[in-house]
Image (cartoon, rainbow, N blue to C red):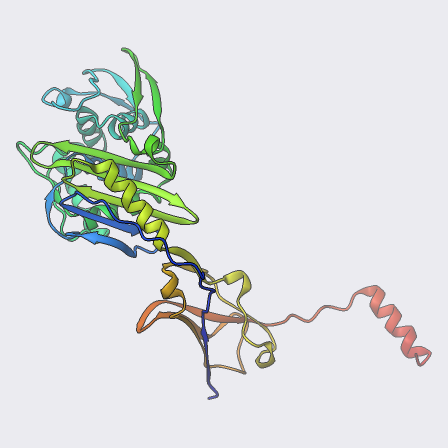
Length: 364
């Protein structure tokens, strides 16, 4: 079997000027910055330390609701809201709201009463809903997370997680269109059968930082201030998580500025412009997916794309003929199959047949 390997070093031009250096301000006990698309960790401090997480719990509460119910369903508030204290939206027993409106109250105003109303409606009761939360956490690889309630209050039951686990959750939640819409909303007006509410988003970063796109706040005396936010710039989509930070908004802005200045989202495989010398093939080669990855300027010069073609002939249409991988130093970042599409012969049309007939007839 014939086989050849092409190694192409991705030499993207380096800027001649010195890279801007940002002094990071980070007063959190635990913190992390990750790229939501690749899940690459761009900055971390005590990222795997288990801590109480307070109301950023409600990110998972919203994910379970969005994935399991129609957001236009009407929820009749029950007595489950009566024991709730702290941060509430003050809904009343018998009041009717859509699940969507409850999620706005949950994520914009951090309503503990909204959390238990959602949990009861979606899960049947709080206990079953918490089971759903923990099952989802396991699916997402949140290996150091335990949920015991839907709201984040920690006097009776406690929710523990890590900065890294919550960043994984934030990354997943931001693949849900409804979650992004709600957490990026500055204010929301709701009218029910009882009264009208006007809710403003408690996430101050939406006003303080121009690249911010959403997130969720949290606080209890035991957990301290917890905050999850997201921001996008130059095709980099990041999330920052801080646990126990009294200067959380300054920390978040500083961490974003650090990451945006240091990393660039580099297109390493372009499915719309993927070629290997056509000399070897009768057909068109292609890959099904593009691949981008956040890299520093120094890392760009060390990144390679390796094309491994192991079948040069006797292939069928859309058959796999090799692989392309992206390697940073000794680490393989990504691998994608390469396929070949056979060239289809054009069928001879009627007019072409007539012309060719007379050419043959008269010896042309």
